[in-house]
Image (cartoon, rainbow, N blue to C red):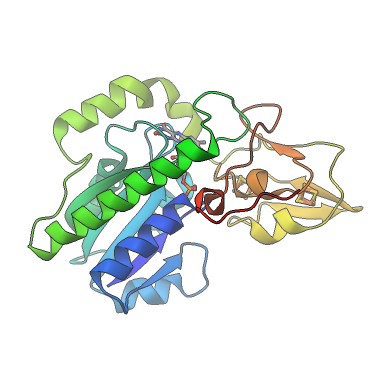
Length: 259
Ligand SMILES: Cc1cc2nc3c(=O)[nH]c(=O)nc-3n(C[C@H](O)[C@H](O)[C@H](O)COP(=O)(O)O)c2cc1C
Ligand code: SF4
Ligand code: SF4
């Protein structure tokens, strides 16, 4: 068993690591941008594929990954895991349908509610304490799910036809354009000090330095990793100002904010 995941602000990483650890202590979680990800996909028969939902859809980087390795999915068992800030309808079902097309045997889908990662839009923002509670509830859901899986019962979140209708009607129909392609919409303000952190972090290699400033290209998968990490809060995408940088470690009980 291996886990393959995309995680922008750490939510999905947290969930897949916990899930794998409880399912099989030796299983590794591999970021989708790792060099060895194809090797890991080839080597294992059971894949846990995890990603954050974006507008009730799978991030384009994950869709491209599935399609790029289309010949490797045949006969693999796959559990699709989608983390989300509020609602996705069929967040897990979207990748499940694509994977089935390439011959994967989808064993189930799991939706996990986590803190919202869109840190440049006020909507859905919660206090650190509220987000801690959300993470606690997510941990409990993962624990219960693993107990059921160990008894041979996989979850089916987002997999059924009515989930698909909910995902379509409530969001995808109206927002499909936002996830159809990579975006060139990243904005970098003059606050940028050229520290290079965003360039190092971006899973798409979408950022580079020019004359001591960060410059974005047009291959952003909207993961919000750079936006949530920039020390100058200089990067935005959907909004125009960073409200609260979202990073999973903030929700640990022992987290101390920078003074
Ligand atoms: C561009 C974008 C779109 C999102 N759309 C949705 C959505 O449609 N429904 C939802 O519940 N959460 C949505 N979210 C929230 C994330 O899915 C959620 O916070 C997720 O746990 C982030 O995981 P990560 O930290 O691993 O990236 C969106 C986040 C981003 C960045
Ligand atoms: S992380 Fe922020 S400050 Fe550092 S280079 Fe990127 S945009 Fe500039
Ligand atoms: S540019 Fe930023 S938001 Fe876009 S893919 Fe790279 S790290 Fe993620």
